[in-house]
Image 1 (cartoon, helix red, strand yellow):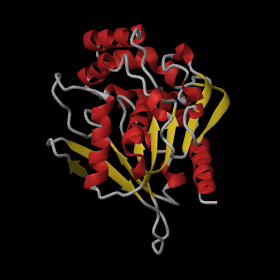
Image 2 (cartoon, rainbow, N blue to C red; image 1 turned 180 degrees about the vertical axis):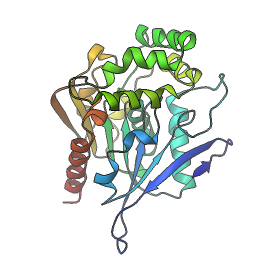
Image 3 (spheres, rainbow, N blue to C red; image 1 turned 90 degrees about the vertical axis):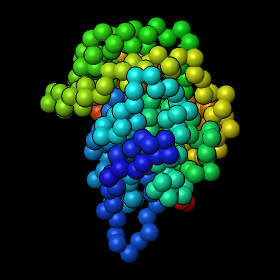
Image 4 (spheres, rainbow, N blue to C red; image 1 turned 135 degrees about the horizontal axis):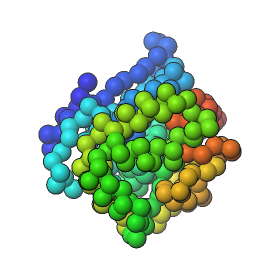
Amino acid sequence: MKVRLDDGAELFYRIDDFTDPWTKPETVVLNHGMAKSHKLWYAWIPIIARHYRVIRYDMRGMGQSSVPAPNYPWSLDNFAKDLLGVMDKLELGRVHLIGETVGGTISMKFATQHQERLRSLTVCTSPTNFPADDRDRAGNARQLETEGTASWVESTITRRLDPQIVDPAYTRWYASQMAATASHVVAGFQRAAPGVDLRPLLKNVRTPVLVLAASDLRGEVLGDFRDASKIFPNGRQVVFPGVSGFIQHILPVPCARVWLDFVRGLAK
């Protein structure tokens, strides 16, 4: 299914709801990261959709959603505006929001603007800021523009998925999903992101927040995201030891179970 935003963009979404039919479950919105799609959440769904109505959507330019022209003004603000548009069009009230990598950063931005729409916020391997002198992002943008998305994914995949843990077949599938994203989409955001710093705003977000992270990330290209929980007044973090990379994709089932425990604890 697709929702049409006010500017004409059409964003794909999917609803997973395996709750008991006589209940009125709360809603969870899943916000994927850069060059990904709703499909990357597949292993979370059996765990959380048994208890919650889950909506996972494809961000603008990715998955099955509309791909804008190369001159589109990519920004956290515009992605957060899209998220609000999806929630409004689907008539969602307060939700549990889960974002991963840049999708988590977008979710944090959304929380600074619309925390009244959130029951909880969870971010997975998500940076709170993008340094102005981020040479790595500038290099990524050049590689994307000259070599394409597949080359960029291949050169960065071991930062994402720990080869000591992840099935090689899963790594190949994961990379193919990312490689399907138009290079100008990824490069455009890579060039627009440096200089953004959410940290001064996050201290005013009183929403219960869970931060999930692995103990290590090769290259540390996302900054010290593990300490994000300390910024939020109601923040909590869970770091998985002995794992390198994007924990939400490497150990999705344990992450989903940690999330269930976190949310159930809010009701006590």
